[in-house]
Image 1: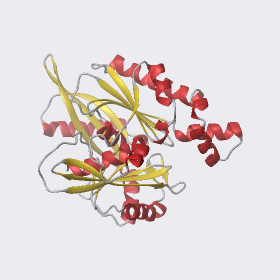
Image 2 (image 1 turned 45 degrees about the vertical axis):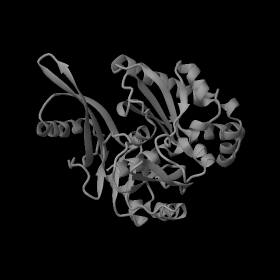
Image 3 (image 1 turned 30 degrees about the horizontal axis):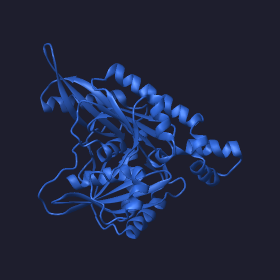
Length: 361
């Protein structure tokens, strides 16, 4: 097994810093989010005043070009990404992208406290335990979340991320086809949390994040930006679209339009009930196993997050506030139309989080 971290040109990044303020020369980065329905790009510039989102681009993903959070047709995606960046006026060459949460293994480990060199070897040994059958060549990274005292010594809480090298290489290929030569890679849960996490410094409560993609959804629980639980469920916007299409005998485009126009009648159906059930399971697991901090709220991102009455329904089912995520909350957006920023905010969380990751380096 080759379990080394990804090399100089492509790195599997695992970080948790929040956007801050410093004194340094301007630096820009672009985040590219590969969705199975839409491709999103955001350019972030870091300067003396903090961070500013200067450009945003959104376009349709070529059919079948992205599946399960991974690029599957680099030849089709490359030109579309190049056109997206050019049409959006994005010029930065510092590119950050991410594998979908369903294409990576994310685990919270507890290990005895030990020196860094020993820890690296111990984590590499642990990687083998989580590999699917037939997968041997992988990339991994880890982050120490904290230390807990224990009789006879301390324990480390470690967040481990593992991805198959073949998936990583396949996901990077469209960027090379688009003429981009330098990239950092992480996984989408970290990008989304980085973009929309509360910035009040309150580590006494936990926040639930739900990123509703077209094919699947990530359910995450984090304290500030420290991920405590990550699940991927096979329920997304396409689930609802297909249900409407089958029930009414419509094609998918017509069903998608109807879904958006008649949301109030639809949110009470099987889709929203299943989503509420999966959220409740995640909350129950967290509170039983990991819940040192109580849940304060749920934050929704992704295109389907804007479905009317979705947030109030989930709030009533879960008994906690539910709100839409705003990745622009800690960034200047003076050069962008306010109405456009408000309209696209939930679906841009991953792209903005990726760009922030690059601008922070």
